[in-house]
Image 1: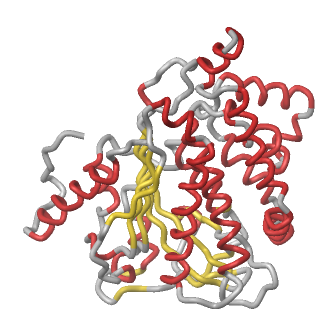
Image 2 (image 1 turned 45 degrees about the vertical axis):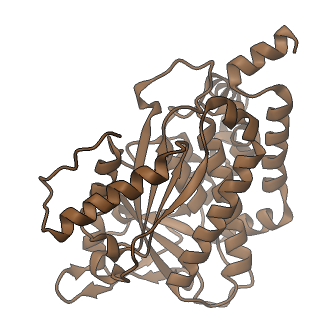
Image 3 (image 1 turned 60 degrees about the vertical axis):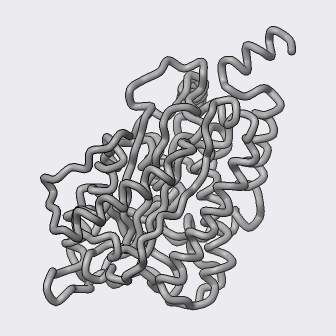
Length: 362
């Protein structure tokens, strides 16, 4: 290997061929006619969606590597309006792994994007129950996290990481109506896949717990008026979680030829329990995950495995959610969360409260 190629590898954690191959795969996805069709439906249906999507990932620059910051600055200097275009941001910055400080963010975004497109155009075209739809979306996400991890496997292996999604057994209880939650998702990135040329930072270790309440709807509005007899409005319960909580909307109640992608609307953007316009203040699922992973203002971070679980279950018992998944760069993440959840269940069953702590090493 030449000295120049070795320098490239030492800077980005990938060699030139690996970067080219990964970029080409991302480019092929965003240029695929099905992807274009799916996103065009969203852009046409929701005025301002392109700018909203762009701002969601430009709200913080912490995720940008030096190459990404330079590209963003050049774009701003040459044609600042391009930064408000989601299509331009995808093509000029997001498809390129060297633009990301942490390769795990590139992997997360494109795995979630391909999962969402497949779900949108192959699953949402026929009416299904919310739980079925959530199961299919998470199934698509599981398959695509594996596929996109395989695409960058050499770089991942060199870092000592394992990019994977783990399904945590909750002994399903079907109690989402009582808790205001439907499924939990934890992003757990330990910093191993940060570019070797970037200076290490304390926030390279990120644990981001999320709760989603899934709702089917027919454009443009969704009904979020559900109320539990004892615990009150579902929306109020969802808003009281200590982790980032949002509605996840499936365009599955009408009969559209092209359904919209799964859209996420933070509970803070839904001011009361009633009806909400899905097309206002929503972004697609993949973009929300990228924003949550990279912006602690959007999604508060946990400081340990057990803290993340307690944030997820601050208003719920583990049996109240339909699913809990962990998307991680740590090969031991699945086992850590299974063990932590087992201990948390034990405390809950014994009447443990918020002041009790599980003493274990993360």
